[in-house]
Length: 627
Ligand code: CA
Image 1: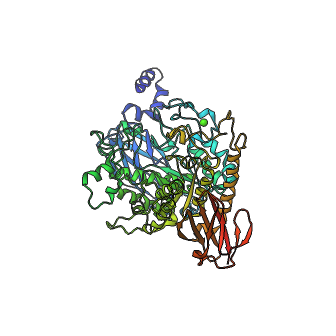
Image 2: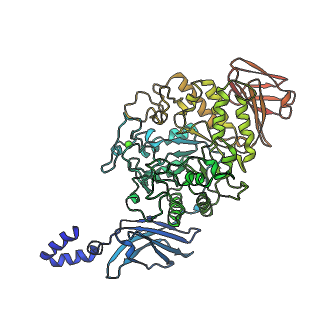
Image 3: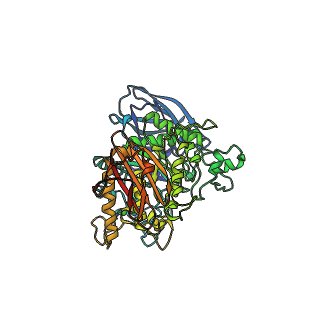
């Protein structure tokens, strides 16, 4: 149609149109057009000299690519059953210089499409970047629900869902600007890493705010901001000692993803053009030597929900696409880590390839995988270094410790007995023998998918303090969900929308403001100050980051554990009993010798430990021993 308009006008102003056509007709008159090339740019100086470009546009697969650039060579070109795609394999020489060049796509009848492509310089020392570790405490934010820093992006013209704060499943307007504006708050609290639920584009007609249904893997959702805003967040956070962890999803995309209306191959999606099949969520089938093949297949091939098509990572083009996409974001946004959603649902060989490709490019760079199972024998299967009976290995360093999280709530809510209460926490930690590296597990009391911990503990503030202290002093890398610092809960409903409710003070007319403390209750204020002190204290205590842990079987509602190294011995005593309790110390002779002096870590009170210690009801006593 546009070509027709140009042709009519050309009858009148022939000369001008000649120039116009020379400039842009190849796309218009011959039918070929280029809509996107991904990755949108790449980097020189990468370990892997190969790059595969996915080129998309009308009949683009009928064209032959040409590139003239020193150090760059086209090694292969792939077409698929869909003529609108072309996959170009490139090899970059070791000494290739950064710069830009034309990718010329030429057809047999003189059709030409041109695209300017850039190779940027890789950041200095990019390979040896810092990554999250036991020193960190990760603050998890649901970005739509934290702070609305820019109301002009609340609804974006052309995007399917706009703002509706009255709908708990709708978009509430939180954005990257809101997080950037409050980095001081996050730093001041003592958090050192930031994990945001996915912020890549999720242009769904409804229920898009959670971000787990991606519609563009290379674009930040404009309702959160731009790609540049994301890079800026990473940079400004880093200046404050806060690293950015990106949430990624390799298992599925959105049914509204741009490629869903014109898929590159006939096997891009599992059960493509077949009857809908939901996953059975049977993670055991991936390990189970007796599993029926069909159950295993449905676990991996099945979809999460009808709105989230399940990606077939066995397709080599898609596998390369996803690997390059992750590496691109690490380099582009200077990431501190990756959190991978639904870790066990994609094809497991792909997850091994994906983690190891990232590890080759960024040795030691940490990825944490979500495997929501209450069984360390299953979770540990995925961790790097695990000797699995079936020989499966990967480069995944960290896994979320769901069993410990569930055990923590049971420990503090169940009646004490030989098989319930604190023993659950003890036995969960005891199962660290499954893990090749338990110190690298992500530990948490709750997250965006679970009831908030204050809710789980029936709004009991003393048990809440015990739970948080435990998370921050046990082995592993702690993660805390936004709002935990002000006791956020949801007594009326356990819905996701209630769990992920707006952070008070994040919206202009909020009557309560957690940033300024306006309107916070005494309990909220107390917890905020208490948690801040604990987080700041944890920062500088290497014994918590890397020390050893010994725990003693719980007895009479009391559970004791020690963290220690050659410099320090810390003793933590959980008294679950409502009443004041006396604890005999003779069992702990390895750490507590007669006349040991102890300093309370927070009150700084110093005293001699004799044969017994008195514990307040529902408390955790934190001591540094001076042997
Ligand atoms: Ca906004």
